[in-house]
Amino acid sequence: MDIHMQKSEIMKIYAVATGTGSYIPPVVVKNIDFANQLFLNSDGSKIETPGEEIVQKFEQITDITERRCADEKHVTSDIATFAAENALEAANFDREKLDYIIVAHNLGDIKHGSHFPDMLPTLASRVKQKLKIKNPKTIAYDITFGCPGWTQAMVQAKYYIESGDAKSALVIGADTLSRMMDAHDRDSMLFADGAGAALLEGVESEEPVGILKHSARTDSEEHIDLLQMGNSYNKDLDDDHMYLKMHGRRLYNYALTTVPSVAKECLDANNLTLTDVKKVLIHQANAKMDEAILKRLYRLYKVKDVDYSIMPMTINTLGNSSVATVPTLFDLIVRGKLEGQSLESGDYVMMTSVGAGMNINAYMYKMP
Image 1 (cartoon, rainbow, N blue to C red):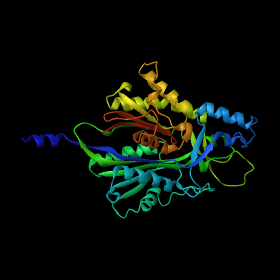
Image 2 (cartoon, helix red, strand yellow; image 1 turned 180 degrees about the horizontal axis):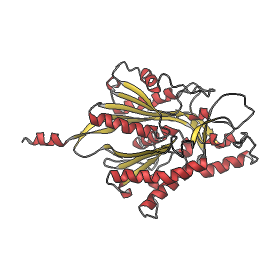
Image 3 (tube, one colour; image 1 turned 30 degrees about the horizontal axis):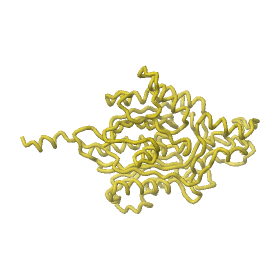
Image 4 (cartoon, rainbow, N blue to C red; image 1 turned 45 degrees about the vertical axis):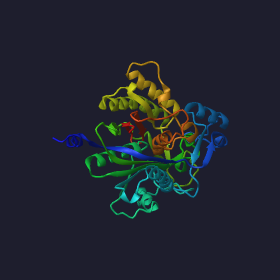
């Protein structure tokens, strides 16, 4: 048999990110900007702790000093489009040849000053229109999977490509959750806005590359209410607005218990151990929580000395931008914009997230 024929028979198609992009909004909101906020308990009673002390304690717990918020004139589909444009440009890809556009988000397009989600038509269709794509065969749809939405969408796109159903997919994660926060809830300091994207293309390779195997779970029986929509803590407000609410302590304990096991399942599925991984890109939810999760993961391998440098962080200045945190982090590293962080060909990267649902996922990515 011809040697070229033998080689082609063992080549497989893998989903590889040929271009990445992100959009970091221009509006900077510092912690001190919340010092004069009227913070209330869930029962409506006033928190007597001085505002500056509340802010200082928040920073100690989360490591957030400031966050980014979208310009008043932009909605989620706008910033998703900005990130998408960057990814397409980086890949030098003809957008008319796109097979799929998948947009992960939580609450759609929220106009400045509004608390009503807008998800019809889908954000993916809106992004397609804003990208001026005319091809009707470019299928556009949304995925709502909580903060792990982008990572789950990447897994979906991988299967489209590996099955031969598609040659390309533009996967975007974008949110403007800062607009759905209750001004009287201390958790309003946590969330930010942002967008990240990756263009996946099918690449022939003899060795596994790009998105490899994944692990995921949904714990809805006992944990479905850890993140949900609810009324303002201010009982005097006469409105029907719904705000993002979370049970912080319960969520922290849930993540600490379950995320490390999902991460290990992902490693096991790929026949890898923690020492094989160059970077762990985890959802930027809370720096102290993420550090505790990594420590627990090391403990599963009976390793006491934790190398926190494998887990780069952006939450200090960007806050928690939900589905946008992981793709933004990946893009910044790939572009060499995150000091002290880099990725080379052959490096293994784990991307993992946890969020409303409650959903957790993790997949392994091998740099081409």
